[in-house]
Structures are given as C-alpha cells and as structure tokens.
Length: 288
Image (tube, rainbow, N blue to C red):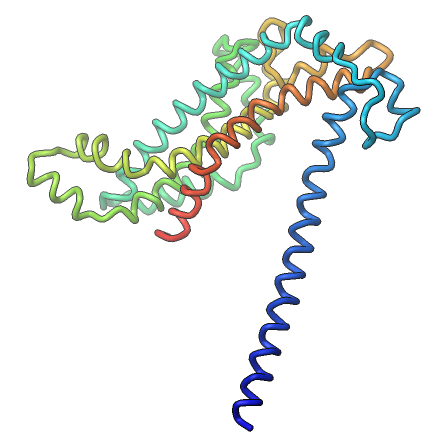
C-alpha cells in the first residue's frame, strides 16, 4: 500500500511538473512572438514600395523585394550619422566606465567618514528623471559653447549613466576577496597597482555588462540629441529619421529601412557579446 501511494504521489508530482513547464513554455513563446513581431514588421516592410503596405499584408513577404530604400538611405549620408553615433557612444562609455570604476573602488574597499553619505547621494541620484534636466543642460551647454557639437551629448550621457554604474560596480567589487589585495601588498603593490592589476581585471564581467546596457541606451537616445544638436552635419543616428521624411508626406518603407540599419549594429554586437552579458549578470547574482 505504501509503495502504491508513493507511486501515485510521484506521478502526481510529475504531472504538476509537466503542467508547470507547459505554462512556462507557453509564456516564453508568447514573449518571443511579442518581441519579434515589431522587428519582423520593420524588416519586411522596409523592402516594399511606398504604397505596397496598403495592397499587401504587412507580415506577408514583399512582392517583389525592393532594395532601393536601402540604397537611397546609404546614398543620403547614413554612414555620416552612423560614424557620429559611434564616436559619441564610444567616448561616453570609456569615460563612464573609467570614472565609475575609480569611484567604486574606494567606496567598496576603503572605510572613511563620508563614505555612507557619498554612497547615499549616488544612490539618490539614480531617482532623478533624465529629461527633467533638459532645460538646465541646454542653458549650461549654450553658456560653455558646446551647443551643437558632439561634446554636448557626451556630458549628459556620462553623467546620467554614472550613478547606476557606480552602484553596480561598488556592489560587484565588494565581493572580491580582500585577501588578494593583502597578498599583493605583501609583494609590494600599492593602492593604484591593486586597482589596476587586481580589481579591474576581476571586474571585467561587470564592466562589460554595464558597457552593453548603457551602450544600447546611448545609441538610441533621442531627447538630448534633438535638443542639443541642430546642424545636419552634427546629428547622430536617432536624428536621421528627420532627414528622410518629406515635408508633407512620409515614405514609411524608407523610414523602416533607416530603423533597420540603425538597429542592426546593436543586434550584431549583442549576438557577439551576449556571453559576456550573461556572465556579468550571473556573476553579480551569484556573488551578490
């Protein structure tokens, strides 16, 4: 009797487990569909003529496939917008990671009187809405002569990415064993060498995660770029849409081609570095 009851209990447990996995797979599949649908819509319709979307289904394969949208986008200066976005994002990420790592090191490894106050201030700055500061930053940028330059974007991008980066890196560095630094100090390393030769190499996964996360946000940022940049020769990729619309009409497939080309670099980079992103997130989760 006991064996039969045990078998029934195991079968019931397996049945509940199958139901649970079935529900999980259903919602995972639903999430994939909801996530991919806008991207599929964007790519398919970028290969149509202007009015083919009205006569063909938006999720049907184009008949015929039109590549002139992409050639027109490239011919009208797409790579200029692309290069300026690369410069702004690369410089902003380098500055942000350098400042954040140097700020997180003393907060995570040293004890001093103002540490709790400084750390609390950094955490509090994470709650400041980014776009509330548009007008003050516009005035400040104009006063210092940076308006309508790429440098006008780098400052806000770095500033608003720093609080979260310092917060995450501080927590990440606190998990690194102090014995490593103590052993290095016995061998003659000072604080600067400990930071550059021990802490930074061990924080690569956290730094790469922050670089990918903030890089995507900076690449797609529109509000500051639209406020602080005016000249067509200084506009970045998020502002390229305005250059490809008519005065009284919109060529939707052409705009979708711009969006596809704009999203493609980030998709490729994510595919290449997704293992580093996952490792960084998992390392933070396990060590935290």
